Image 1 (cartoon, helix red, strand yellow):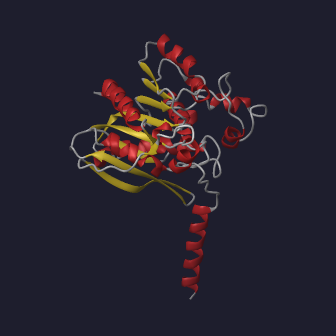
Image 2 (tube, helix red, strand yellow):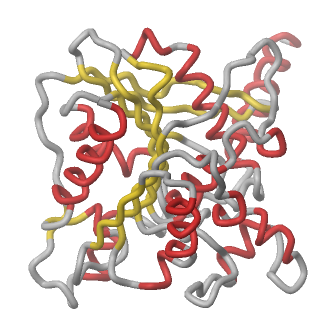
Length: 311
């Protein structure tokens, strides 16, 4: 009986460790549709499609910290060749959203000859910056270490994110080989460096004339700008952009607040002759990637850019 009681306690403790934080479900494709349909009555939510040339592996454990398990989903072209990989980060203001929201996007891109991974990372209700950055860099190392399982060329890795995920993607890509942004794993010396950045409507600077970040950013960064200006600056990809930054694609709505710092970053990239592109989807709302008629356009810009820099 004691053994059974102890087992029940251990199971209960493990469950609590997994759910001892608030799960925010306010940001979803459906919530985006409901918000935007009055302004854009012609829109529809992108629906799942059928793909005969991709394989899927879901709920892959890539890290476990004090009982907290972090997982990723893999969608990869079944062509038995080493393909470029895309690590995909969902949006949601650093506090909402989940990896499954990028499934249709990952499937579509994978069908065009890529290996795509949607990543679970810890949100601001559970852990503050830079924890999520550490999580994603661990996921990148996991993917490289297990590249053969997913038809991945480990020397061709792109990081892609939407909204807050775009901000994270840009920060991760501009901090390649920066030890300050690495949480080292024992017995894993694999680099988390990426070779391309795709930022879909994510800010490049938290404090900027175009930026309107406030309470939501403060929740992730641990405090407001007045209290922690150095953290707001450190968490901005613009701060780290230099001659080592990889080729970068910006896909934007026409709403200025969601590309705060972009033009300043482009000026640095141009200074060092680093390839970059800007694709603006006119008359579109933020979170356009969930919706028709903009989904296919977003996929096309993504794959054209990657084919140019990788193939």
